[in-house]
Length: 235
Image (cartoon, rainbow, N blue to C red; front, side):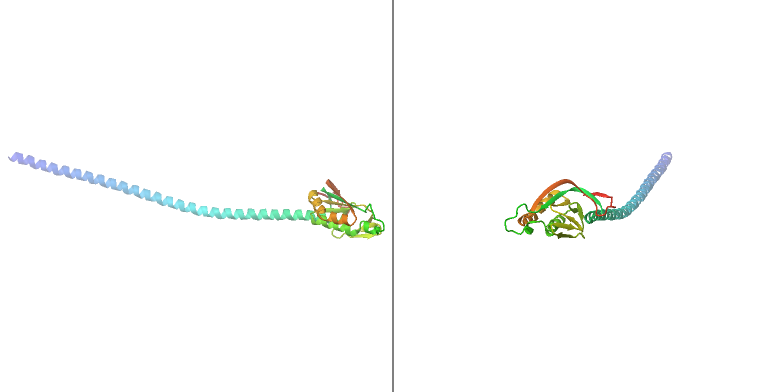
């Protein structure tokens, strides 16, 4: 009986020892797992914080990029507007130089020939059937209003200071005298110029006994008012 009690006691001690060993192992395992989870959580939290920081930086850089792009776009628009304005000024200067007759010019256009009436009724005043300065001025004004870029009378360029007057049977253009017929040349859109004259002026002149002939030309050349001007502009 004593031996059995002794074995029972040892068995109990071993059982308790095994329990504690098992408990310690489980506790250590749990602590290790908990520590691993904690480390992973800390690592994930750190990565999450880094991602948030990167996203914040990206957003800031994106905003800065938009500002820079807007500045670049504004500068490009300003440069484009300046170039457009410069091109417009050059074109306007070119047209003005053509109109005032500073340069040689060539281009399509029309020629309007005004001739004294070939028929004068008996008893009528012949002076009423010849070309006068006002007839020439009416044609020139209509051509300029219709977009003519350069105008000449019998080959002589006309500008804003030109003076046209009648001197007996001839017409004086800036001091140079020309007899009829008078050929008024104009450089510009030939179709537009022709339609404009036929719309009104040609009929008025015909009703006043003036013979009017209009012909479209693919190319007309005009010399400048001053002989020393050698540049040539295409209309």
